[in-house]
Length: 270
Length: 270
Image (cartoon, rainbow over all chains, first blue to last red; front, top):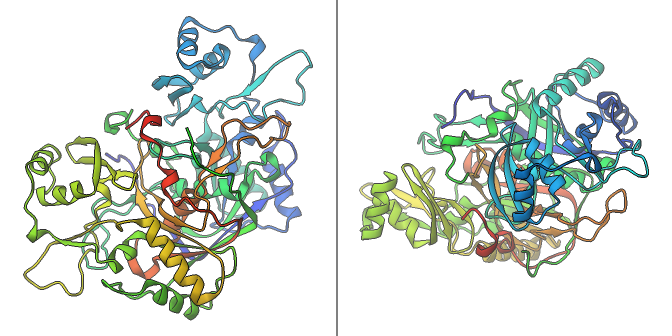
C-alpha cells in the first residue's frame, strides 16, 4: 500500500533534545519567517547544525502567507448551506472549508471532517478561528478565519532553503498542525508539510532480535516528531511557535508530508 | 464528548530531553521490570527526579507478564475461522485476537482492526509476532505470539509505585505501543497505559492571544509523548525499550490511558 517511499532511515542518538523557540513576534501577512526564526534562534543562543530539525506551527506559516479570510465577504453556496444545516456550523465558515475540500469524510452535528486538497484528513479542513485576526483588519470587518498554508510541503521547502542559506547547515523542516484522531480523544501535532526529512521510515526487510524479518514496520518519523512538538510549544501561539530538535540522524529526503497520506483506495475508514 | 476529564495541565519547560534507556536485558516471563529499569538507569547515570516520565514499550511489559501464547495449542473457533478466511490471516492468530476483542471495527483482506477490551482500537488487538519467543520455549513448540498487557493502566501503576519506592521521586509512567492510524501511513507510538500523568489536557476555557476563549482545545499529552518515544527507542527491542523524559511540569493525575479512548457513541469512524 506504500508507493514511492524510500527506506530513508531516521535514527536517534542517545538523547533527543527539543527546545521551544521563544520570542517570535506576532506574525503578520508578508512577514519573512526565515528571518524572524533566525533572529529568535540567535537571541536564544540556539544554533542550527547539520541534522537539526525545526518544527514550525502551521498557524504562523499561514499568517505569513496571508491565508486570512474575512467572513463578512463570504456568500455561502447551496452546498455550504446544506452542510451548515447538518453540522450546525456557520455557513460562511463551511463555504471556506469547502474551498479546500476534496471530499467530505463525515458530516453530522458539530462534526465536519474532510479530505483536504493536499491529502490530509482533518476537522474543518484545518480552518482556524482562534488567534485569527490580522493587525491590518478594520474595526468593521471580520470575523476572520485562517486557512491552512496553500501547499505546506512547498512552504516547508522554502523555509528550509532560506534557513539553510542564512545559517549554513543542512536541516529538516516540518510544518505541524494539531489534528484530532478517530478512536482517540485529544489532539496531537501532525506533520502537514515536510522538507529535507524522511516523513516515513520503511523498515520492512530489516531483522528483529531473533533474525525474523520485520514485515509490517513502517514508521512515521515526521508525525512522531510533530506530535510531541505540540506539547513543547503549548497553545500559546507565536510565543513558542517553533521547536528546535537535535539528536536525530537522517539523510535528506524528498517526498514531503504527502507520503503520509494514505492512498484513498488503501483506506478502510474514509 | 469528554467526560470525567480534569483540567490537569501539562506544560513544558524551555527544553524537553528524551534519553533512550539502553542496556535492558532480554526480558523473560516473571522478570521484575522495575528492578531491571532501575539498574539500567543507574548504569547510564540517569536519575529520576520529581516530574520525570518513563515511557516503556508495551512489548517488554507483556513479556514480563508472560502474555505469550503458543499457537500450537490453539484451536480456532468458527468465528475465528470465518474472519481468518476473510482477512487471509492464520486462524489461530485470529482466535487469540478475538480473546481480546470487544468489537471488530474493520475486517477485510490483510486487515483486522478491533476495539480491544481495554478500549483501544488497533490492528490485530496489538498481538505481536516479531521478537515473540520466550527463552523457555521448547524446540517443538510454537510459533509464539505476544498479547498486549492484560491491563496496561494497572501495569503502569504497578511499575510507577515500584520505581517511586526504589528511587524516591514522583514520576509519570506511560506504556506505549506502535499503532497505525486511519488516513495516515506509518505507525506512531501511542499511550496504552498511563499512571501518575495526565493523559488528556483539557484547555477549554483558557484564552488565546486575543482573549478569545479556546473552545475545542483538548490535547493528548500522553499520546504526544508516546509518539516520539517510538522514534527515540527505535525498533531494536529491549536494547532501547524505555525512554527517560525530563522537562515537563504536571500534577499527578488518575484516569490512566482509558480516557484517551473515545466513547463509542462519540466516534464517527468505528
